[in-house]
Amino acid sequence: MENLLGLLKIHVQRGVNLAIRDVKTSDPYVVIKMDKQKLKTRVVKKNLNPEWNEDLTLSISDPKTPIHLHVYDKDTFSLDDKMGDAEFDIGPFVEAIKMRLEGLPNETIVTKVAPSRQNCLAEASHIVWKDGKVFQNMVLRLRNVECGEVELQLHWVDIPGSRGM
Image 1 (cartoon, rainbow, N blue to C red):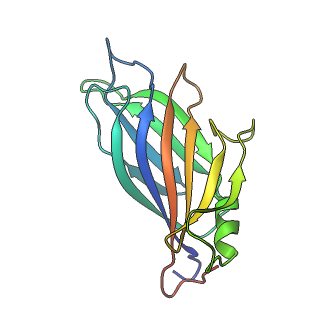
Image 2: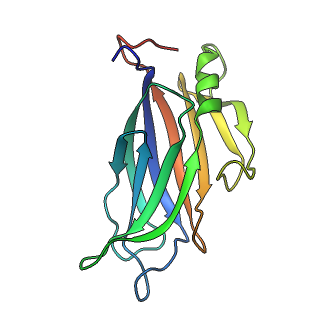
Image 3: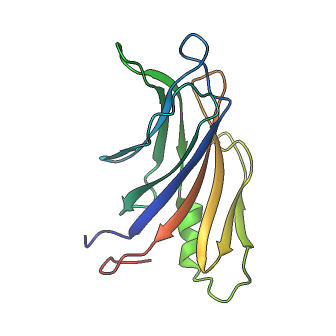
């Protein structure tokens, strides 16, 4: 607990144009991993554009540790099929939190992260000050697969007794 900076809430919104892994469709779910933490969404049956709308929460002690996202197709009688993966970095997001942005107008764009070969962003990701909190919306293009994207929203939660920012 003494090494904990805070909690990262990841709102897994939806998948877009995911790959087909069964005959005509797939039963996708998302797994998010960071160090020894592993979180999973529910399975959405027969949908290539699933809406999860689920919050997954990671405890953060080192903001430099990358977060891995994997999409799988749930199979009943065999191992689940891989439907792609992505990786993202919360470094710019954590830097925006450290700025202590109180007093800024609502919906102010603090910074933006451009897509590049070093990240899995499909488009520019804005870090925004809204309702007294910092949010980051991102669209991740899945790797190692023919198509697919996953939309996420990041939100930071300070916890009492942590070493803070």
